Image 1 (tube, rainbow, N blue to C red):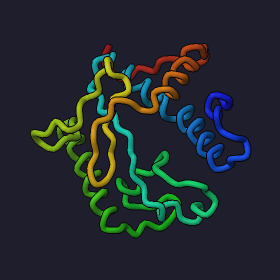
Image 2: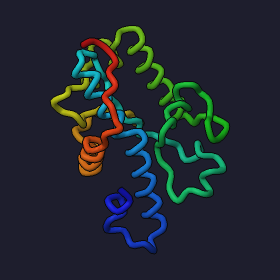
Image 3: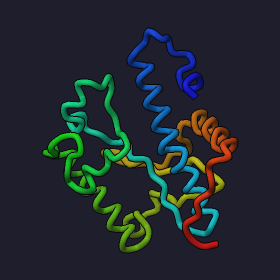
Amino acid sequence: MFDFYTRGVEQSNEKKLKERIVELFADALFTAGIFENAQNCANYGNDVWLYVFDYSEPSGFGPQREFASFVGATHATDLRYILGEGFYSEFKPTDDEIKMIDKITEIYSNFGKYGNPNETGSQEWERYNPEHQRRHYRISYPRGNMRDEYCPERMEYLKEVRKNNKNLETVVYGRS
């Protein structure tokens, strides 16, 4: 896996190597399983609303920012905007972050009340379709949008890895 993710990167390019290693761990630990789980849930008749959270404020990384060669949305970055609390640093939201809090609150409230994250009458965020496995809603600021792919080459590679790994099982939540 290391070779796949770091191919074409000079060993002397420490920043790029770190970025690729972060991609490897994020994909292997979270992303590949999330997309596979969305597929499985939809195949068993559940309504699935798949998103990628793609917004971050560099100040949200607190002291860890000094050690990182890059910052961006990571696992749990969205919790700042859902819970109003910082994970790595104190959360003193900017005007843009307050707007993101409002947006996330609306999305989660709509989903909780109606089973659909869209505003009433809106179809901006499409329900997950198993025939378009990588199509998802990208939550960002100032506006989110539907995307057709998510790192297609990496996801296909990990799909093959998961298919060939006999230790993984399909977890089913929902109707059968």
